[in-house]
Length: 107
Image (cartoon, rainbow, N blue to C red; front, side, top):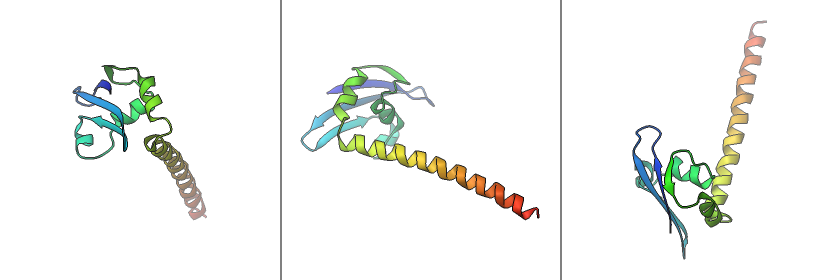
């Protein structure tokens, strides 16, 4: 089992993150309120991406990346990254269209 401790950006609280392979896939847990509510959390996403922001101590982050490589977790994180990029492009395109509309309404 891989173990990490991370510090919250907002509260400074320390959370425990664990990851281990199971027969059903990978158990990737965090003790933060978001994870306790059944949501994904930025702490796990950061570590999965190799980002050590807030990392206090723990196992090698590369070992975590090796563990999740090729898993459903990795595939869904990749999908979220693609969708976030697409959403950013759409937001920029919408802002551009609104500027063009404003110019057109000026006559």
